[in-house]
Image (tube, rainbow, N blue to C red; front, side, top):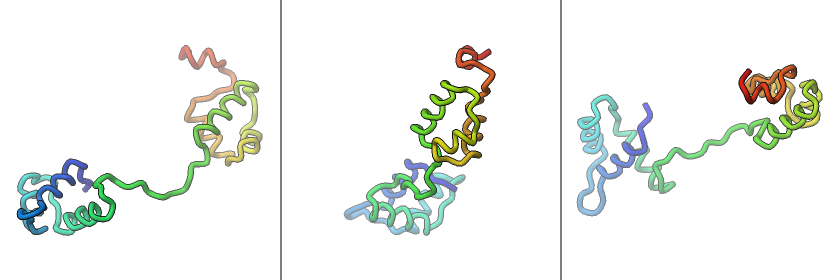
Length: 126
């Protein structure tokens, strides 16, 4: 179950500060009473609190992962090359733009590209 940012902030508010500090078990019970469909455990309260202490935010942090083979700049370069020569093969596009041929093919399919349709046809939707 994923909590919204508003719910995470509410958990931090329920924990309190200064003289009104509550235990994690109390916060868990209060939250579960208010949101019966979103039951949380004491561990969830602990994780949210420690994440806030460490990073200063309750936002989801960016995650590491594999970089995309085609960024927006490469996509524009491929599109401009196809405007010059609509019958360019995916092999030559892959070679010219240093990207896998299958990635080029998937990109063209997502864009619904067909070499026999002119750019004007794509714009007007015919």
